[in-house]
Image (cartoon, rainbow, N blue to C red):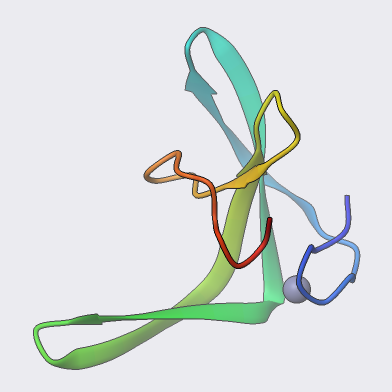
Length: 69
Ligand SMILES: [Zn+2]
């Protein structure tokens, strides 16, 4: 697996189970995502999983990540 954003190789960081299927979760330490909470900005390494349709999804919300697909 390569990171869909920077194309570097990424390793599996775990897995999640949804609809009875197990999906691998990947993390890219070279890419970060940021979000705001309570007026503060947070950053974390980019994590994503690949669903049965081959889309990159957010492991927390299971929603496709628009910026990666
Ligand atoms: Zn990356």
